[in-house]
Length: 225
Length: 33
Image (tube, rainbow over all chains, first blue to last red; front, side, top):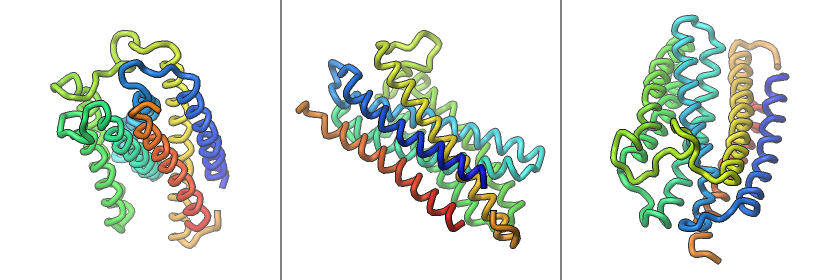
């Protein structure tokens, strides 16, 4: 199946470029003066967080359109995006505490940003568990769409929580109304990393979509795509 | 070695493990859906 092959190639290229981002971030990007080496976690944590949020927005959009159009491709896309989002969410929730320990002095604190990010992660798990629990394809897609839309509604609160509430988590330094407050070399590394995470998201979603298609065909007793 | 380098190393290793692990998992699942 062409979709699967293309997805595999994009993922492979994304992983190779990730190695390049590691080299650039560790060797060719200045060390931040106050946080030292721990600040380099930023180049993985932020792109993963952006894609964990964006993937859920895309799940929500796919779900809304599915409810109107009843097109199974939208449901497959939402499922694929949710699984990729869970992967990026797990990166956020592991790199965040690892960064927090040396800088804040604690692995975890129940402040708004951290708690809402955990809630987003749990929404992903709930969404995928629900899909596994309902056997009827039509019902599964409809129930999952409702959860997907709820998840997408959570994303603005996750992103703006640092502005809406008093939190330990820093304010946005790139995605904000004014210009990014980051030195040029660090910004380039961040953008490269974001590009690589975007490639990985696309590769994961294409493969996961292809897998859903293969399973549907197998369940229908169809061809060997 | 700066004091917080091990934290940075742990974050980089775990991120690579999650991404490569999921890519391998997907590859295996798509071979036998």
